[in-house]
Structures are given as C-alpha cells and as structure tokens.
Length: 131
Ligand code: HEC
Image (cartoon, rainbow, N blue to C red; front, top):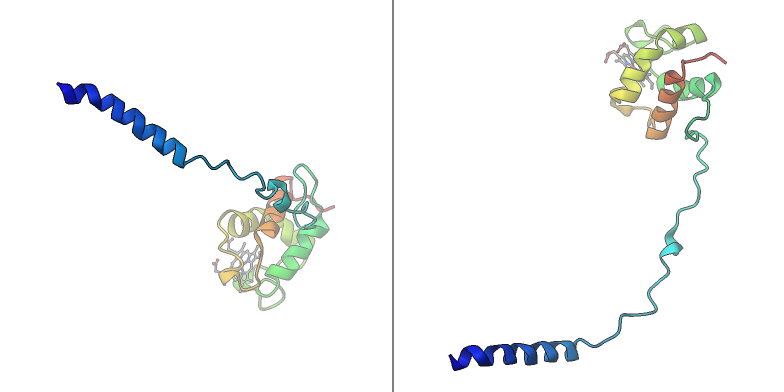
C-alpha cells in the first residue's frame, strides 16, 4: 500500500527531470520555406486550363512524335497523319492510343512527354478543330 502512494511522486519527479533535460529552445534560424518555390511554368506544350489548343500545335506534336511510323507509304497499319483530314479522322483513336493508354508512340520510340499527351488530349476533347 505504501508503494502505491509513493508511485505518483516518483512519476512527477521523473517528468520534471525529463523536462529539465529537454529544455533547448526550438531552433529559430531554420531556412525559409519559400526558398524552394519552383519558377512559374513556361512550357509552351502545357496550356493553361481552359486555353484553346490550336490545330497547328496538335499537328506539330503529331509530326514530331508519330511521323516516324505514321507518315507516307511506310505508315504502320496504313494509318498516316499526313494531312488535316487524316488527323481529324483518327482523332479519337489518337486520344485512345497516345493520351488514355499511352501505348503510342510504340515503345515511346520518339520520346513523347506527358505534357504533349495532355495537350493533344485537350485539343481532341475541345473538338479536334482544324483551326
Ligand atoms: C515506333 C513506331 C510508332 C510510333 C512512333 C507511333 N506508332 Fe502508332 N502504331 C505503330 C504500330 C506498329 C501500329 C500497329 C499495331 C498496333 O495497333 O499497336 C500502330 C498503330 C496505331 C494506330 C491504329 C490502331 C488503332 O488503335 O486505331 C493509331 C491510331 C496509332 N498507332 C496512333 C499513334 C499516335 C497518335 C502516335 C504518336 C503520338 C503513334 N501512333 C506513334 C507504331 C508506332
């Protein structure tokens, strides 16, 4: 019974000792959290949301990332994106293969970026307009 009464006293002493040994103030010279703010994006292939993506932007992405296999006589499975009508005709397939599934470009042989996929997808969801 005596031990049970003494126990709270020991706990208080132990707590005081712990506090005394842990008395160092929090560092006041920690680095400013704003120093690592990244610069505003200026990547031209990433349009601000709501901004219209023009046909010429979409076409230049297709030319640089898809023409390797989808242009001229050697176009894979006969699918070429050589002119406006062809690109328009395949717009939904382009979205399915290069935006939604990312299976195209095959093996990403042409190094297409996610920003370019996003831009292409925006152009198509905006109606794949030819102007
Ligand atoms: C390295 C070669 C290569 C590149 C680059 C490439 N493709 Fe393909 N593509 C193929 C091959 C091979 C096929 C046929 C086999 C298949 O459908 O997976 C094909 C088929 C297709 C088809 C027709 C089949 C369907 O799903 O309707 C579409 C559409 C297509 N590719 C879109 C694209 C787009 C868009 C790009 C550029 C972003 C692209 N491809 C870049 C090789 C390529």
